[in-house]
Amino acid sequence: MLEIINFSKTYKGGKKAVSNLNLEILPGDIYGFIGHNGAGKTTTIKAVVGILDFEEGEIRIDGHSVKEEPLVCKSLLAYIPDNPDLYEHLTGIQYLDFIADIFQIPSAVRTERIGEYAEQFGITESLGDLISSYSHGMKQKLAIICAFMQNPEILILDEPTSGLDPLMQNRFAQVILKEKEKGTTVLLSSHLFEETERVCDRVAILRAGRLVATEPMQKLHRRVYQLTFSSEQQAVLARECWQDGEVSHNVWTVSLKKEQSLQKLPQTALAYGVCDLREKQETLEEMFL
Image (tube, rainbow, N blue to C red; front, top):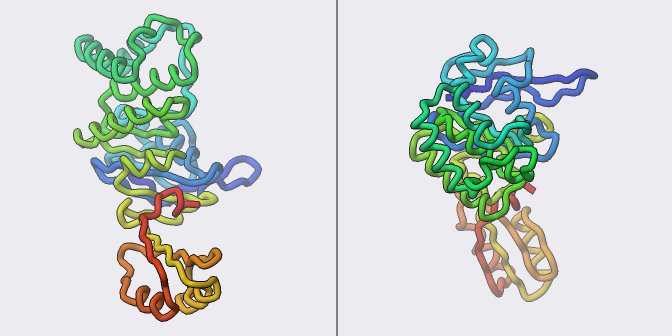
């Protein structure tokens, strides 16, 4: 559905924002796109949706080139930025009708979809108000309704829940999971690791403009073990034998990927007099940081 092939972007002054990025997102996938500020996520997303021109590489949506067939590509996708630019002299419903006209959504269909999503995101009573009177969160809700109303084949989301309260963030995640059931493809850039973990099938991690990892969400998790010893010295010796992990006082913390064997860890722990062993699953945030 979405192919990014050898994509690079250099801004004026020689700053390279993205370097030789290759990524393939299959139909129906929900793909998380994470990285620190300045990692190149938004640059990539803007190139995908046709906002940002680029000279190196190729981007294809459902086999169509973003460069050579921009209108076809835009007809297949919907885009939600973190700070949407809306026509503030219009009311909410006027803006939704305007977008629906552009995408040629029939009157009965748009009425049904607008009503459904406006109710879910608690904006129904405000659709008659000028957008200029909306808070950031209200504008974000309007942009979300615009995107889902189009019933796109692919959703491109750049910090889509920015400005939303926890209740609405949860509601948004529920809607995304329903889109997955319909077969919609999603590229989701988010700083909310809990949101990414909840809805994404796979995750791509960008660092300094380069792709450093792309894995299924389940495979990306590690199992974290906290082993308590009778003394800090015993914990240090166990850690040195294993050659991994961290020691704090008399507790040695070590993480293993799911495919790694546990056979040797208990042997090492017992050899140095382990008193207690506890397991927890490392979150995406802990792994990323």
